[in-house]
View 1: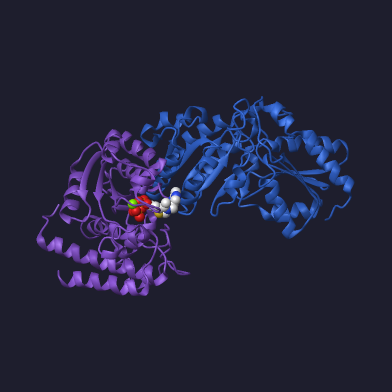
View 2: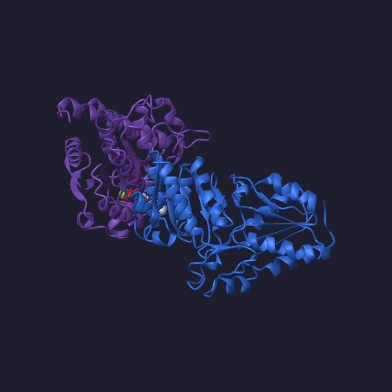
Length: 281
Length: 320
Ligand SMILES: Cc1ncc(C[n+]2csc(CCOP(=O)(O)OP(=O)(O)O)c2C)c(N)n1
Ligand SMILES: [Mg+2]
């Protein structure tokens, strides 16, 4: 892995602000979608797409590419924004999100959007899908790796734990999972709706290599991924502490912005904040 | 099981052997299982190709999604378990991760229908054909016997896209032969006739053939169609049967609410309406019992097929 320089961190931070602006605009434009969980996962997705993943925007189905799986499919605005910025399709297309005849469906569809690797929407299936990918890569003695981003609300789903067992049974060290631990799901705080703690112990008990990080600190994200790459014989889960709605002050930690777009006035405020952040970089 | 003139054979044994043969021919074929692999005989594949076999435990949603991931990376996974778990129990996983994705996952399930027997209603799924044929992009196969189950394995692997195939726990009469050929999307006419067409699937095909023999003695000429592909439906063959014989009786080990009877009725209602009767499970759950006892109690018999034909003939409103 290349050295983590100040320049790299600065570039990733700038890119993340760009993605957040896309997320706010896309969801505002169609007055629907899920900005909160898109923004909490934004720095993880940015680190992956702009530093880690070996993908080729000109050849999205290149067989030896790394696979990114978004299990919490409602957060696809961040995925589409990253794919567009990475050159998989024109940035202008982002404004077709959730509109009739768009390639950018409300939840990810396989085969339609260049770069999208799974279908998601019903929560809890992505980690199992990633297990299948990781098994195939290993069976073929390939070097490509699978990265899966899960929500913390998604830890409620039984299938997530079926997948956790299967991944450790097969010692899938080519699989790295992220839990976007923003503490909020659709209708409230995770610890009120269905308590998850001690979450770390749960994953350890399932024989995963567990890392706890700040999911908005690029150095920690990159270091954790590097440690996952070095880990042999076990899959790694990176529990990333995050803030839902991260990047726009009035959206942060608000249950409402799980599934609500900004109003016209809020959009202006949000973009002003993000632009100010950009300017200060 | 009444055998008529036919040999009783295990569809699962044919299935297990066919998987191993396929595995030998095609290194991309892999098998996933859910603690039912000995019963399904998919364990035979696991013994022959341990590196391409994944025992995933009693975790069917995970099994289906893992199969989808394997398919997304170029494998041809066969997901194998009992029909109730490989359809209803995992319905939305199949819908989202297999069909919506249009991935090359082959779900092959035994223990379909009432003839699961003593395990009772929890294990006797009479709804899977309807569930599966309702999903866009899904191909639905119901082989009539052991040899046809083997042909279904080969054909499913030879096509791109998701497949659901259901067959029986109990031994069933072998009514097809290699000369019949097998093609997905093709309904096979096993016997010609001009007064009525009997359309069956699975173990009811043999009963349709027996009913046709009985009817022949009464000078009623019955055509028999083996509807081993429920979806895509062979509209041309069904339409021709409606036009040429003017009456249709369907027979299935499945609820009549949304099984092959409903599929055939909808097709002929649109193209060429003719009187139709449906032999099948009447919107009820099954119960414990031996396979043959259950088929009798729930009306899935040769006599019921013959009675249905008599009723249609008596009505006299045949339309060709
Ligand atoms: C199986 C399933 N049940 C319910 C929903 C409705 N739903 C959409 S998002 C969501 C909450 C997700 O919470 P989390 O996984 O924490 O996502 P994030 O906070 O990262 O947005 C729910 C309940 C769903 N998508 N899937
Ligand atoms: Mg959350």
